Amino acid sequence: MTKTTENSEVPFTEDVPALGKRMLGLGRAASYEAAKRGIIPVIRVGRKMRGLTRVLEARLARDPEQTA
Image (spheres, rainbow, N blue to C red):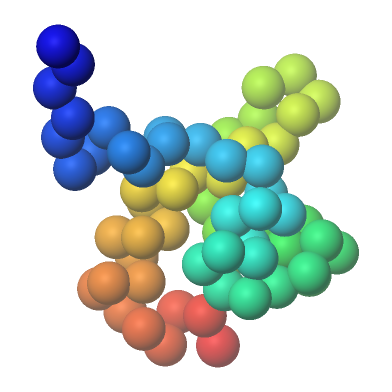
């Protein structure tokens, strides 16, 4: 039997293009540009860039104008 909580369904990180598309409706290049500008919070693991899903969700819930 596995317990499922609300937080376990949301990944901690996602590919930047996937996160940008899902949360902001951006394409691949625009998602990476948003990450470069700090709109999409990221961490780097070697050369790989991962978007911080929960941080972006919290930021958007707090300030809807952040996407502008």
